[in-house]
Amino acid sequence: MSNHIVEISQENAQALLIDESFKRPVLIDFWADWCAPCKSLMPILETLANEYAGAFLLAKVNADEQQAITSQFGVRSLPTVMLVKDGQPVDGFTGAQPEPQVRELLEKYLPKPWDLQLQSANELISQENYAQALPLLQQAYRDSGEQGNIAIVLVSVLIELKRLENAQQVLETVKMADQGPEYQNVRARLELAQEAGKAPEIEALEKQLAEDPANRQTAFLLAVQYSQHDFYGEALALLYGILKLEMNFNDGEAKKVFADILAVLGKGDPLAIEYQRKMYTLLY
Image 1: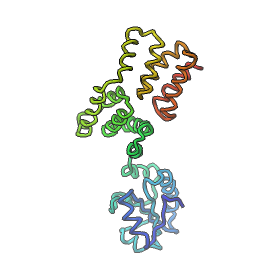
Image 2: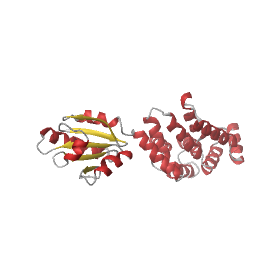
Image 3: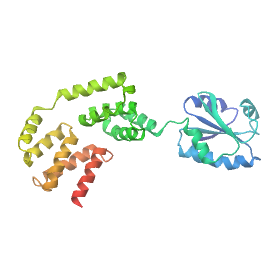
Image 4: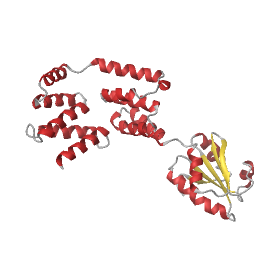
């Protein structure tokens, strides 16, 4: 039996049926050996418990052996399934049900995948591990249909990673109804970051490149400066532009800086994935 499935006795009933339900939903399966529908339902419940990997606890109550518990929950026929949340039964059914119906019941009370991704991202943010939090937040943002609370956390991380243009794009998707104190706070942080501007050496090179856009050496030097100040998106865009025209520019230095930035970003970073694909198309 897995960690997500337990057998209930008089000794553990309070801890596992009631106390545990304040931490996560508890699905109670009242069954008996003589009950044929119970035996067809139980594998479905066990499969779902393992699939959801601890998002809920499956608690199996043998109605013949645990008559006091069965009576306490008012069970009159078998199988009976009850979902307990915060100490109270909130849903359930009697009789064997097909897997889609059981899944539908569960999903009304279980956290959505993007809620779990947001939770994992917040744990990484608390450790200041913004680069690892970013792909989780971007996935949660997409999967949730650009949910406002996730957008605000995503903008905050993008600011930390100095991806200010991306942060601005995400911030603009936040609906008026979600523009509360947290939104106002992150908007102010973004405005301050934008006003802080870039290092003088970057501004000088940007000016030179604007005057002579075809100068690959200036573009390369600016890309290096961008990378040193964590403006990775800007750096990769410039380097990719150079590599499209001259793969071995500066005796391969442009390609090396490009690869170094991808290594810093890490394999799971969406920006790294985007430019890895672009480089692949150039090479093959």
